[in-house]
Image (cartoon, rainbow, N blue to C red):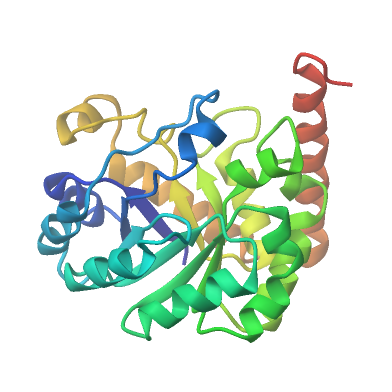
Length: 275
């Protein structure tokens, strides 16, 4: 089964989505450096705060709550302690580059919560085997948005199409850790539909993805979402697609991968300056 992550700081919306197939809710506290990295893109930069953790925690008993913190900084220990005290089950560390950063982070956590590395840098990918081996990391999620920017790529899914994600996934599997990859929109939509991407999740043994704002059309409330989609039905479509691909042979999965790579190349060529 895929474990879908929904980003929100609204307790009522958190309760709504977990009742309809979402496994994990994320309160997104990352701000340091994010505007500088992504300000030119159409990505959403969340304005959540620590008090949102407690509010969302109360709304989703029995479900995992993730707090995405800032990259390691001089207030990291304070951020870690407060997130745990307020009820976070998983602490996500973004934009790490060195084993030392991850070691510091894990030292502050002291196994009081799960540690999820959000892999978004080339340096972090290059050092990942050593980072995992020397720390109390519990899982890894590949953040394709910042990773493709760090690589200088034109399209978010180029690292998936051209082999880097395969290398990262191999390292994570060798360590026996759960892996998640990027985000998903709705099944059947777009030049690179989510159901095709789910074949890549199966091939790479990924069991986690964030539901992108495209999935719910940036709905900011239950009313917004219910007006333009049947949330449970769309979640079910993704889950069924994943389960269907689990029945594929590796040869069949590789055929889908080649189609994904071809579509990515076509999308890159269509961009200004693409070749």
